[in-house]
Image (cartoon, rainbow, N blue to C red; front, side, top):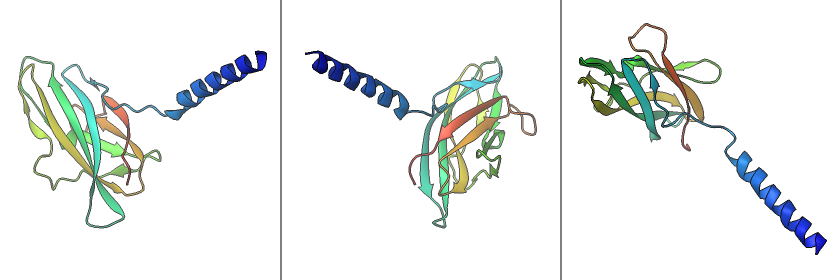
Length: 147
């Protein structure tokens, strides 16, 4: 009886440890960050084929909330993407549904940001600057879906 109880306890402990380690790296998907004027939430990340097999187009869907009482413009140029080594990747501006519009006071919009990345890249840091050419006010660690 003592062996059975010990076996059950060991199995439960092992299950808890394995489940806890299964998602060892958290990402910031669905985490709202930004400046007092704007809050940005990345909600979905997908990959699309590019012109070559070595590249992919990364699509990041975002929700943007204007926290002020006046309209504010936002576009894909307010965002940047880099890998763990600090290499930055270019915005892919060939999509007609890329983020680039004015957000009315107190309103929330959704839009897409596209980057051209290597097919092998699995995660990266996306940052947001309230105004282009300023220091970022928010940064998210994002995991990219399978190749």
